[in-house]
Length: 413
Image (tube, rainbow, N blue to C red):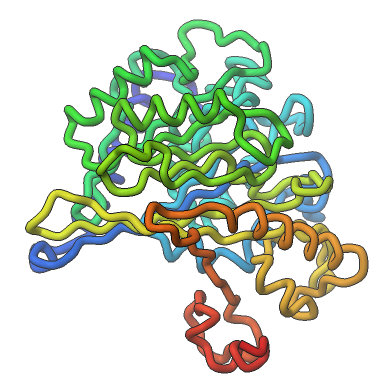
């Protein structure tokens, strides 16, 4: 591991600037006269329990988590910006699971290869291995060229790169992130963890706008574990964030999918405020009802050259974590639940696993059907079908159910 010097801080600054330049030049001069659009994808808690590490362990002693993402990586890669909460420190050996995590670096490598661009690190497990674990996590993500948000070696590093404004396809976007706590483990100076603090959050929201942000997204770690509905504190915090300049609030920590709110401030004449209280787990070893899956949220932002108004279109994709064997290989697989329920044989899901999948899919859909837009429409579910299905000969990844005659016929639609 490299020593922690100002040179490392400069390296991370250069990385953020390179990301900024790459996003800035992603669009050309000739598209400025047209509508500009950005697709942002949010995923839940990327966990690292010991059974996951045991499943990823290879004969040569290395770790391979890439099978986890085999069914969803095309969808993740289709986003202009994909964000996940890294809920484990990359603190090195000895590796451990709950209650104080340390995951192999390969977990972050596989998530990056699957398409994730940004990892939030402000969560209740970021201090599990103390200051050394926090610092090593930042160095590993830096070396992997993954943008991290929420924890910092010192105040100087935070001030230099937070809040950052990303110019993506002509829309200036800022990501903010905070956590309710660190499981009682103190944060020693000079380390910094972004906590839910109204004074600090108000300052960050103001600075983001001063730096040119047109759309601000707050990623927040909060709530009660395993509660399927947001509590009053979450609702009040979300409203406070929206009233002070955040355009969307995306939450995690409960390890289950909670409700959406798409009309958090009814008397506001702006476009719909998006609040997702909890995305659930992205992948974990948790198998209790509602903990064995989650949702990805897709937020499409659009702006035309003649208007500063940004319109937004929000969808969700439910997925279930299959802990089992596919093609003779035991692993944890993230499977789109709608597709897996319709075609369990394609994912080699049977027996008790199939019943658990069906229960998760039914519970999640029923919970989110109550979420409505200001005009009364339900939030849209993203239909997803992997390109490996025998009835889907085309390559290319995502195929909407109603846009594929073969799938429509098979499902009786």
